Image 1 (cartoon, helix red, strand yellow):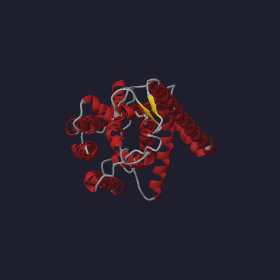
Image 2 (tube, one colour):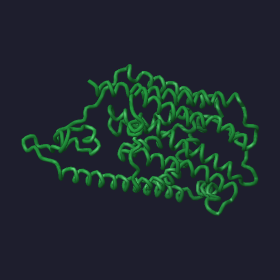
Image 3 (cartoon, one colour):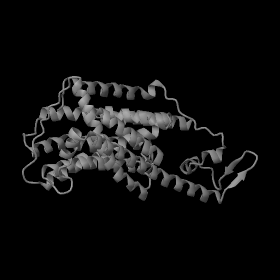
Image 4 (cartoon, one colour):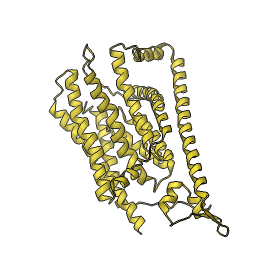
Length: 368
C-alpha cells in the first residue's frame, strides 16, 4: 500500500512539475511578446531571448520541479537526483558528444523536410531575426551558448527525462515511455516548426535514459546538438576556417547532388546507431560485472531456483543491481501501476493545452 501511494504521489508531482513548465513557457512568451524589448538589433534580440529563457529554464523547468519532487514528494536532495536519473557519471557517457554531432546533422534534415511540408499546406514563416554584428562579439556567442545549449540541456532534460520518465516507466514499458516522452517533448515546445523533430529527439533521449539508467548521456547529446546550431551559425556568418561555409555546402548538395546528401544522412544514422550500441554494450558489461561480484557472496535456493543475497533484504538494491529475476525467480514480472483518471487528468489537460498552442502557432504565427 505504501508503494502504491508513493507512485500515486509521484504521478501528481510530475503533473504539477509539468504544469510549471507549460505555464512558464506560455506566460513568458506572452510577456516577451508584449514587452517588445528587442530594439531591432542583435543585442536587443539576445536581451529578449534572455528575458524568456532565463526564467523559463532556471525557474519553471528546474527550480520549481525540484522543489515539488523534494517537498511534495517527501525526498531528500540525493533522492531527488536519483529519482531524476542523475546517477554516477560513467566515462563512456562521453560518447554522447559525437552522437550529438550525428543527431544535429539528422535533425537539420528532418526539420528541413518538416518545414517544406508545412509550406505545402500554406504555412508561411517570416523570420524577423536581425543580422549578426559585422565584428565578432564573444559575449554574444557565449550568451547564445548559455541560453540555447547549456541551460536547455540541463533543465529540459531534468524536467522531461528525469522524474517524468522515472514515473512513466512504472506504468509503461520502454516502447510506451519512448513514444510518450517523444510526443510530450514535441508538444512541450508549443511551436509548430519544432514539434516534429523535437518529438523524434525526445524519443531518442528517452530511450537512452531508460536503457543507460542515467540522464547524463541525454544531457550531453542535447548540449552538443544545440551547441552545433549556435557555433555553425557564427562560423558561417564570420567565415571561420572550422565550420564556415557549412550551410552553403548543404544547400549546394541539396540542389545538385541530393544523392550525396542522402548518403551523408545514412552515414550519420549508422554512426549514431553505432555509438548508442557501444554505450549500451559498456553498460551491460558493467551490469554483468556487478552481478558476478554480488553472486560471489550469495546463496542459491535450489527448491525455488532463485538467488538469496547476503544481508538484509533490500528491494532498492535488487532493482539497482537489476537482479529481480535472479532473486525473485525466473518467472518474475514487474508489477505495473495502472493510474486512475485522477492521477493523469492534469497531464491530459496539459497535453490539450500544448496541442492547442501548437496549432495556434500554425494558424496565426503568434509568438514569433
